[in-house]
Structures are given as C-alpha cells and as structure tokens.
Image (cartoon, rainbow, N blue to C red; front, side, top):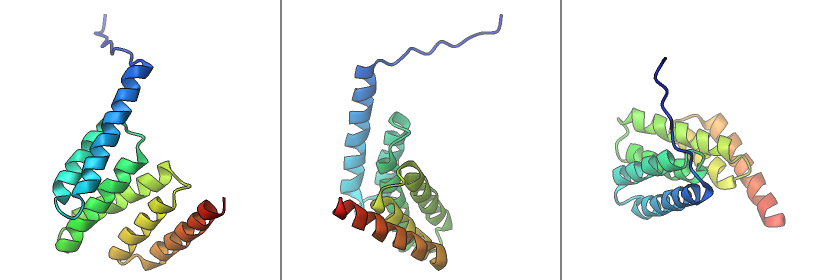
Length: 133
C-alpha cells in the first residue's frame, strides 16, 4: 500500500475565514506600499498562500516589486516579478482596469513600450466601461 495523505476538507466557514484573513493581509500590504515594500511583498505572499485566486494580492505585490525596482534599477529580478504578478492579476481578473493599468506601468518601466501602451489603452477602455455601466 502506498501511503496516502488525507487532507482535511475545508468547509465554507473555514474558506470564508481564509479569504477574510487574506484580504486583511492585502490591506496591510497596501498600507505599507512605498514605505516598506519588502514587507508588503511578504504580506502578499502570505495572502496568496491563503487565497491563491486573489487578483488583488498579485496586483499589490506587483506594485511593491515595481517600487523596489524603481529605487534600484539593478534589481532586474524585482522588475521581472512585478511583470509576472501584474500579468497574473490581469489574467485572473480580465475586466479590471486597475490590473491592466499596473501591467502598463511595469511594462513601460521595463521599456516594453508597445505592449505597455496597448495595456494602457485596454485599461482606459475598461475604466470607461466601468464608468458607463
């Protein structure tokens, strides 16, 4: 017999508590943006572990990565992480103008202007749709 790991099933109360905890971590990370971006990255990583489908956690983590890169242009890996997280957030929430605006920011920071400006146009169109209805 091969060993079988049995994972306890989470009920809806557990899941709701995890989502609330993740949202709290993202709120803490958002408050730290610009002041302590490394801690913001860590808080978002904890939130993603609790709620892997949280586009907001990926969005905030991308902003923190970009802030770190902007302070140290040699930190190419932080820029690449910012791009990866921004793309993931937009993939997970394709109707969010905020996600596409962040993608535009990180791509332009990486000198990928063609793709960055296309994302900016997408963000503008989504924001207009959001305002219209």
